[in-house]
Length: 524
Image (cartoon, rainbow, N blue to C red; front, top):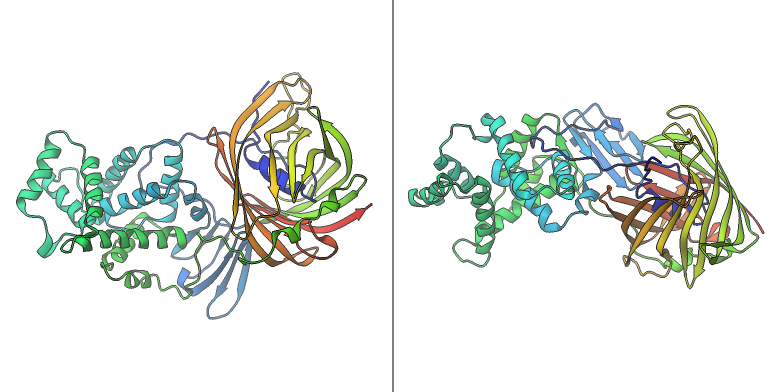
C-alpha cells in the first residue's frame, strides 16, 4: 500500500477536538530535499495582500491569526487573516521567518547572520535567512553554506567587492573589514594579511579563515584595546535580526537587498544601532514578529470545563474555515460523548460526523466520521488517538489503497498526549511521544514518527469570533518530528467564561489554516 503521511497536523487535529470535535482534512507531507542555492537567488512565495506604496507609509499590527495594515495618512486599515506574506512597492514582509528561526539553536542562527556579515557586511533578508534556516534543519553544514555564500558574492562583484580573479590578500582584507571592522587606521598590516593569505595558498579553505576570524572577534569582549571589535560584530548581528526576523523584510531585488542593507550596516558603530534602523523610516516601534503575543496574565484553569466531556453529551459545532488567507467554508461537527475502548483501554469517545461545505478554491461538500479517543485527568485532557479517519486529497476526494478501497487510518500516541490546564502564564510543558499511523482495517503500520510536543500558556485575552466576543486562554503549541517534517506551530483559544467555557473557539495553524467557532449547541 502507498505510504501516506499526515505530518504534524495530527497534533492540530487533537486541539480542534477539545470541545470542537472531529478531524481536520488530511494533508500528505513529504520531506523535500534542500539543494544548495546561491544566497541571493531565493524565490519568494506569493503575497497574501499587496499594497501600492512603500512599507514606511503603513503601520502594522501583528497577531498569530493575521495582520492589520493601516495607511498612515488616510488611516484606511486592511485586515489580512492567516497572512504569511505582504507585498509593498519597495519591500515584502515574510511573516513566518520569526517562528521558523526559533526551530534552530540560537548559536546556529547567529552563525548564519555572521556569514552575511563576513561575506557581504550586510544584514540578511528574511527570505534568504529563512531558506538557510531550513537548510540547517535538513542537515547542511555551516561550511557548506559558507561555500554557497562565497559563490553568491562572486555573482555580484559590483556590490560585494569580490571577484573570481581577486588575490588572496584582497580577500583577507575584505574579511578583516567585514568581520573585525578593521579599516583605515585599524586596518591589518602586511604581515597579518600575508599570514592568512599564505594559509589559503597552502590549501586552507576560505570558510575556515572566516570561521576563525568570527571566533577570534568574540574573544576580545573584555579587552580594553580591542573590545569594540566584539561589540561591533554583536551590534551587526542584532541589526540583522531586527531587519530579517523582527520585521521580516526583503527588498524587491537582490541588488537592492545588497546595496541597502550594506548602507544600513555601514552606519552601525560599537555604541550605536539606532542610525542603522532609522534608514527604514518605520513609524511604529512596537512591531516584533518574533514575540508571541499574549496578555501575560490570567488563570488557565478558568478555561477547563470537564462537564463538556460527560457521557451522553451531544454537541453540534460549526466553524468558519479559512485557508491561505481566504474564507473557505463551514465545518459542521455533530458528535456524542460515549464510553468506549481503544487498544484495550477504557476511554471516552467522540463519535459522530463532520460535514465540510465550501467554495474556495473550488466548490465541495463531503462528510467524514469522527472517532476520537480521550480521557480526563486532573485538570487535563488526555488524547490516545483516533480511528476510521479517511484520507482525502487536496480536492476532498477519498484516497484509495491498491485494491481500490478507501484508506481508513488509525492514529495512536505513545505515551498518550496530554493537554494540561494548570500551567502558569508563560509556563511550558514538553512531551516526547511516538505517533503511529495504521491501516484501521488491516492493522498494517503506515508511518511512525518521534514527536516533541510543547504547549505554552500565554495568558487570557479578549477575542472576537463569529460566535461572539469572549475572554479566552491563549495556548501555543510547537510540534517537531523525526523524520524532520517541517515544525508546526499552532495557537488555540479556549473560552474562559459563560455558557461556552472550555470551548476551543479559535484554532490557527501558522501559515496553513484558521478556524473560528460560529455556532455551538450542547444537549445533555
